[in-house]
Amino acid sequence: MLNAHFDGKSVVLDEPAKLKPNTKVRVIVPENGETDAQLTESCARLSEPAFEKIWDNPLDADYDKL
Image (tube, rainbow, N blue to C red):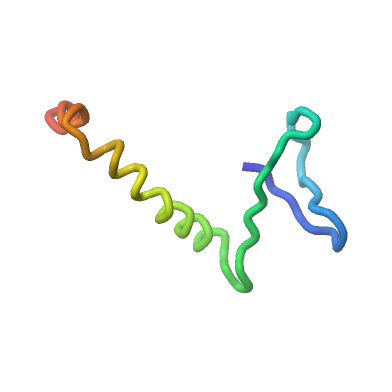
């Protein structure tokens, strides 16, 4: 994750990043008043269906016995 801010004209990274020129990035902007924790929780909820498919399968059942 990279931290950045909007300076009124452009999105500016807050720290150096090792990115190749023209690397595509996604910027997620929290809604008004949304905290970092709330944004993190929302993103985690969006991932739940994918994790259910990965974890809820017969091959994963072996780990339940550990």
